[in-house]
Length: 232
Image (cartoon, rainbow, N blue to C red):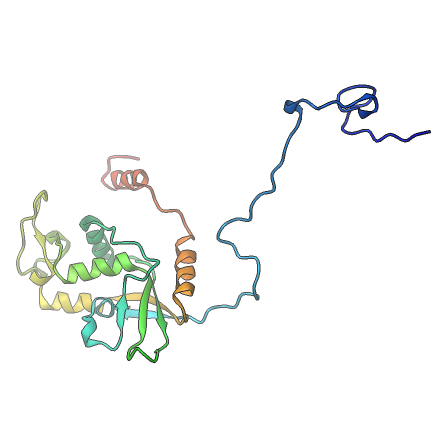
């Protein structure tokens, strides 16, 4: 007696019963499953992960807005993995409002690379926080104003009429010396890494910025409407 191998689920001369000749299963009855590709951005080899040695602590705003030529190391904002300058003046001014209110403004992450034979100073790349640093520098450099009403009258030396604004604004240069000094001393949380290459920095940048989903313009507009009592 000869053994027969029956392919598929059918017997007795039904489709895919090869005992009585070749039959092809209809295409609609065939399900092909592709092997999924490994997810991009995940590594599956190498040694076990070790915790990075990070220094974290408060730094005055003056550290972030400093005149680089007067310091041993320069804060570099344009590392290869960074995006361009994307904040407008309204978003920058709202960061200043957060600072004045004492709200959390997030960590600034930098990486200090070791001194090299061809570099008399340390290379300090800003990994995360470029837009915030530019906003702080722009305000201190009087590149854009904030509403004068945000400050007590005694801290405003001179106001400016700003196109499209219903009330005057004030530039940093037109605030009191006491306010300027107080603002410069305001602390920001700075996290400092000590990675040896720009490739490691790029991975740090990607991991920091992959932890959440950016708020949409619609969500932010709705929050503003609620803030102004125009929505629930």
